[in-house]
Image (cartoon, rainbow, N blue to C red):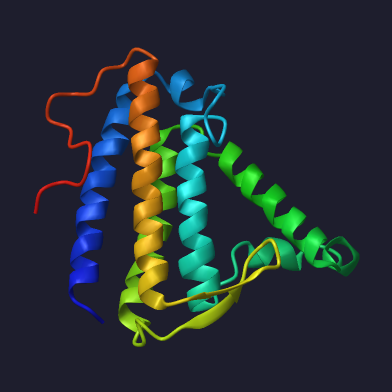
Length: 186
């Protein structure tokens, strides 16, 4: 494992904590409120989307950990017999899980699972630049590497962090003076 990747992820977690602190300073109804123009309906939904993508890319595609495995096993075979019905079932499960996140504290807990996935990836990934194929939800095969999976999720998280901070400001909640809008300093 490239030792810079776990170090970089520690910076990501510290940066994420600043975002959580800012989100927790907003009224909870603002965090949960559907916002026209947001890519995932609410600030909470964006947070959940980021965690879901870590679960898909790092967990499912790279570590072979199926998200919602227990819930899917409880469904009848007819409910998930086609790829489209399987994807629809997972989307419904993700949506239900997102709705259970009733505040920033609950979302923080979701990211503890993400941190465990990343720790497992850092322990097990040993072919960082060896291409492998994943079949995306759309059915499209895509060649990636372990390094790409890790870095892509981090950059994806920061993309949405920027959106969340911008929307918070647009809703009238200025950023604290001490918040780092990019990545925290080492």
